[in-house]
Image 1 (cartoon, rainbow, N blue to C red):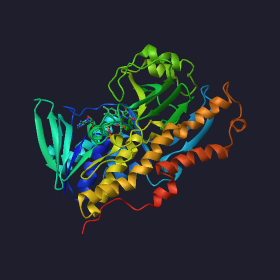
Image 2 (image 1 turned 90 degrees about the horizontal axis):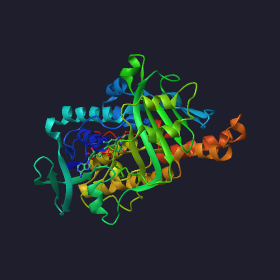
Image 3 (image 1 turned 120 degrees about the horizontal axis):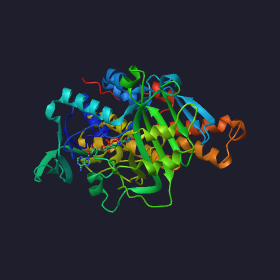
Image 4 (image 1 turned 30 degrees about the horizontal axis):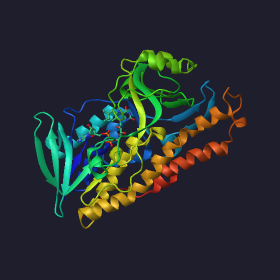
Length: 419
Ligand SMILES: Cc1cc2nc3c(=O)[nH]c(=O)nc-3n(C[C@H](O)[C@H](O)[C@H](O)COP(=O)(O)OP(=O)(O)OC[C@H]3O[C@@H](n4cnc5c(N)ncnc54)[C@H](O)[C@@H]3O)c2cc1C
């Protein structure tokens, strides 16, 4: 069996490693002419860390990311609502990593090229269309350097081509653009002094919401922190930023007013934002859950299959898990069509539920509840929310996303054992 993956993001590259480990021939094309270190911070939750560790990337993760110790929710005034230990500190057998998305992508790219060969990932080739027959799928690729159309065939095509996926577009031609929920996001990474224990992720307020966490092990080794920050605000005006485009430059003066009141003892958010070399603006978008991820020899993976709001840190995490499940199902099926059907059955409904859970605010819903109930702040959180209420929001979300510690720690591996 040979698989062609369209898209060399976190999903496509980890799928390539997973398929290769399962003994399946695989090649990857990406529309970008060059894969560079793009994006800002991202969190890889323990259920995805487990998959990367089982793919043999434990040392690279340790050398690159920050093993997150705690996630702390604050209201907009900086009062602590609650804190959750994360990763190993929460009893998982695998850490949570806060990491730069671009560094993680390049780490995966190098691993793919080392294991599968230098030509396993080809850039400047955009999937434009496909045609399925009973025997093969033929794929039209636009060579972005020459403008020429190239046709290749494979047993399986996997669309891992992100939120504006061309493969999804052909499978669901009436779908239209990504859906914006009215929230503007500004994001950046800034080198600064470590805050709290240097490994903590914080969230403050509901609207605007501020998130910050350190992402760089090499900065930590120098006694510094490279802090990823994000600010989300629901504004009464439309965004100029294109939907689903990660490259739109944001303006300092657009974001500063939303964080003017977030100067805390442990983190001066306005100073952090002012010191940021490049600010990105990104409308918060997702897409409706799909009734199917493909037909016959074609399927979707990662953001192409289930783009979701960034609540709960699950976008990259679930893309990585998709690839592992895909490889396992293809390796154990009688034929590629049955393998893709089994992959979809294993993943689609769970991912659809997660997309909808994130529309309800995911675990960050506690921030909204506190802001509604105590708009002027609180002295004792017990007067605003009970511990049971806080715990049940977090636990319900972990179960929907498939990472409560007991289940994950005892779940069988997706490693394919070869005869
Ligand atoms: C440039 C960029 C920056 C990002 N920055 C962040 C960030 O800072 N924080 C965060 O949380 N998430 C970020 N994301 C999104 C995050 O990486 C994804 O939500 C998540 O990792 C799911 O990964 P994915 O592989 O499914 O999709 P993506 O990471 O979006 O990767 C899709 C890949 O497909 C390629 N592609 C697109 N169209 C085609 C086509 N027609 N044919 C072939 N290839 C195609 C793209 O070039 C890209 O490499 C970013 C995504 C991109 C592309």
